[in-house]
Image (cartoon, rainbow, N blue to C red; front, side):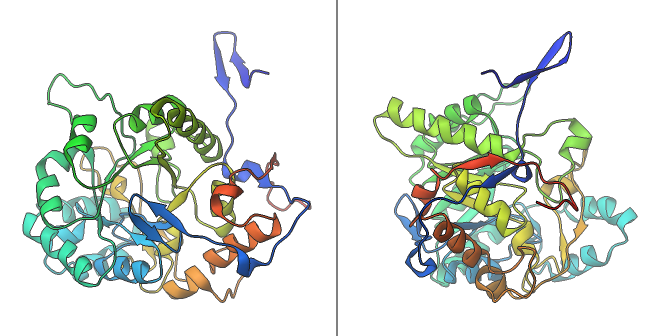
Length: 377
């Protein structure tokens, strides 16, 4: 049955679902949460948590990257952020946190206009490496050619190429685009690339040799891409589509497994659980980690889109803090709204539906159940 609906006589559109539109369905079997494994592995790197800290200055500093790594997750540092523009960005972070809303965008554009220093990229990555955790750093496609050698020479373990959307077929009459397939082939480290939001776009990214594909477009708490560009991809459908692309790519490639990483709109533990249920192998978290007391945003949250020099597609939002990073990850929870004990919630969801690990959980039944604020279900 077609999922398309008629918008008007001249246009049809495909029906798509957000994570709020779906719910996980309990099964006939339940398990003990202590028996559930949340382990995740990409290439040769193994993690006890399937949580990746998003490369956003409000969520990940070198110190929080290290802390998340020691807790069993993977932190990714934004190598185009304040940490690679200023020797000590503490004053800039404090200023951003205190800016009046009407001044935040313009002032952030000024602060982020400082040049990126290759020496600071090296220093930050070496700091993470010396702590003994997996080293991951992110560049946009536009900056990858300029700084990738610095990043690799600094000893990065996992290279992340992250943009609002990343295409394997970028076309330009003005600049030489990044040849992703050639770039990944020549690199000696696994590459995670995205975002992608459709089956076809993800399949093409997988064919470049990427180890993982980030799924999402403009769905984070600090993003306004839908308002500024009119573009949005509901996350539940996007992850399910990319999961299908991965399945077909495995057949096409003779069994090569590319990890599907949900990225954006995962602010609560329930969102995280549902992302795994529709096909994610791991989740990239910004908002959820920016609420910790150790987060460099000091209760505020923003992404790179918020300070774009020409067309901002995001803003700084106030989240407040809810507890330490350890409490955010492992509890104990002090509220019932899904902000604390993310690992415990995920573990309990798997146990409640009878699954032992995340790959099994991708087979869980889901129902379309649009959420209505204030409704009684």
